[in-house]
Length: 319
Image 1 (cartoon, rainbow, N blue to C red):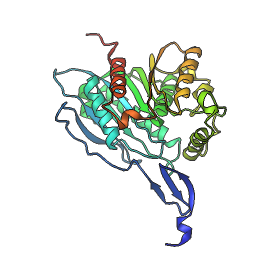
Image 2: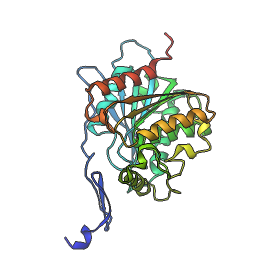
Image 3: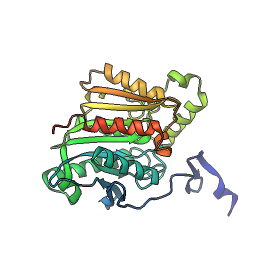
């Protein structure tokens, strides 16, 4: 191999390397878990193609169905990974969605959007919106997916995501607020360790110059056409449409030792001030870092966070 093919165009350790000849090497997040039936909980999962033209796909999970004709909430989940690694089929993403379906007694659809740098933003946003519209098309009994038609209550939609996926979940909520999704009611949005940023440092970012530089570099790497770090896609506080967020409630989960913690708190405070009419709650995990629940799903803080998310999804149910 000639030296030129090994020259780096972009390096973002420990996630990804891009070489000058165009090769992309993902350094993590490449493992795949097959769809399955969980023997402990009875949750079933399968993979579905949403748009063969773009290869947009998803993994859908249904909990054990105990009552015939029961309609369940639907959580559309967007995985993390900096917009450039991980998939809906990564083991920890699969396991989280599986647990969420079991604990919340909800249908979970985990979107496998296309990733940067081969497919730079806004492609992941467009894929995510296409997936939402495809799911919504089942509300009139149209659409090809039987699990959606048979089991979903289309008045109890939720968006959720972690890290970059939380960023997508928020931006999809903005889009719902301004583009109206027919015959579907988005009740709430769950943002776990959301990847937000901004040109001017806030809170702990002021003393963590390297951390801020990394987060900023990643954004311009995955969204090279962005207007910059105050682009509303990465800095929702700068979005004049924030007050029109298209749901009734938001749960923000942050972690004490996460570099992005202060952005989560800032988002909560600014959303409350924006004139938006909903309710925003926040939960902070003490002593934990970014994405801890994916790597330590059985630790006390991860269990507590899952319980809070489940309560958020189910608290308005009328029996």
